Image 1 (cartoon, rainbow, N blue to C red):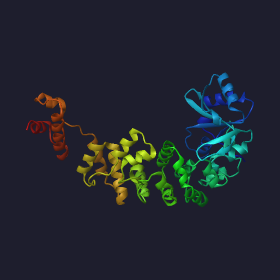
Image 2 (cartoon, rainbow, N blue to C red):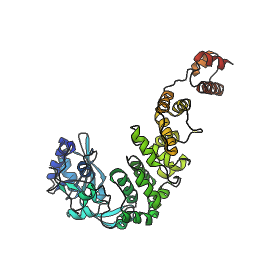
Image 3 (tube, rainbow, N blue to C red):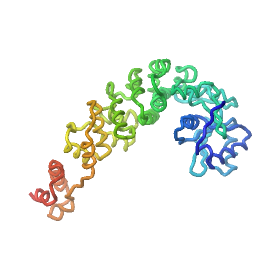
Image 4 (cartoon, rainbow, N blue to C red):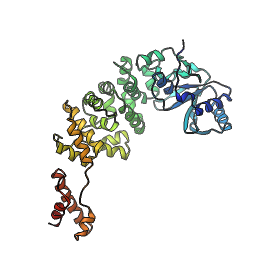
Length: 397
């Protein structure tokens, strides 16, 4: 009996409207890839991809005629984005690769569903489903590999990687998100032998893939294999040897903290220059600020006073992440009082402002900034207990 998927995404009015419009193209349209995979695992489906055995010009025509907005996001590769209501759908004509150079492919369109399936990366991503949810496993191993949480390349791992070297990183990302147990030996051997291909990829693509991987609940095994195959040092030259990711994951689960890419990245690159990490992954300014806020503190956080200072200086989220990283490295568990103290520190408000200093005759400028810094340091060193009157007396002095 064929597998079937279900879910709100499958029967939503927007989905039905797009699939109805595609019928006018005269071919067959099926859901494909991540939406089918995640639905089979009963996970939330975010992105809905559709495959169709007609050319992209025809797809654009029938959607336009149905008053559905079309964006030619990847037209040369047969991909367009359809927008209906608040949902978007990536629709790709069946294709096969005629030439690849490790970064991009030259494709030709086909009506052969098996050829379309065979050009994909992993068996669990070569699954299709009809509008009623009936699943088509055209290569015969996608569903079984998915159920076994086995990330397996379609055909030769080496061949698939050389078609697009980003698939090296995708292997580790998919294992972190979907895999269990040991990784496939042939895939690891292929990755180890082709790490130089990572140098040909745009840093933006590498960074995007790494950040997606770092958000996975179970990262430790994939990260360890990245190090053993030489992929980690190629991707992040400043990565430290054997970062204690398993210990950090234990703390995250114990305290109900969601996986965070910047927390994990700070652990992996602890002791390195954040600027080097930013260049390697083309991080955004926001990500760079988050990474810097999670760097190792000058002194270890041991007391509630230390924790309040950390929370005040870095904010609650970054302060707690810094604390978790420290304890992951020590192999210890932080006291809940220490964790709460970080939150307490974040809530502190400096009692003295520039307006207060102006009121006692201090003119705006470098001198005011110097006085404010000195007063703030006194306040922090007092564990935030010095009152405004006492601090103003110090300012006058």
